[in-house]
Amino acid sequence: MAVSTERTGGAADAKASVPGTAGTAAAKPESHSPPAAASNAPRPGDRTFVGQPKPRDPTEIGLGSVVLAHEGPDEGWWEAEVIGLNGRVFSLRWRDYPTQPTILRKATELALLPRGE
Image (cartoon, rainbow, N blue to C red):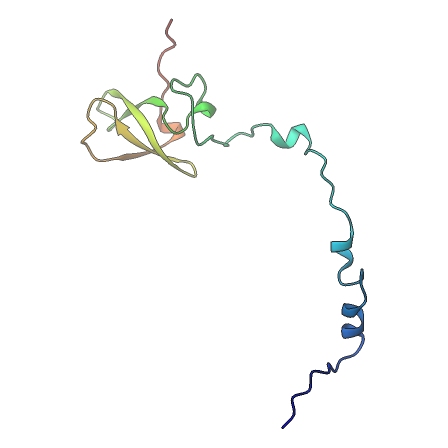
């Protein structure tokens, strides 16, 4: 039994064999111009993964930031370090009690440290 290497097809095979016609989208040169400045501007809700150590604005909260959080409504506010970020939820570790379990808080449940000198 002989194996045939001849292709049987129609216009699709003919088009694939002609140089430069294999894909009109691939033949067009890509634009390497920088994106518009507006697309690089931070939007509300955007969070940087690596944050400021002492953020002055909630949008600066990110990995490594020290913020204030509370355990419950009857508890005081304590310093906590951001150790993770998952969408809108921050994973925090109490700064003075690092062996306590990790807590999860939304940005609206956090407060910023007072501005110091």
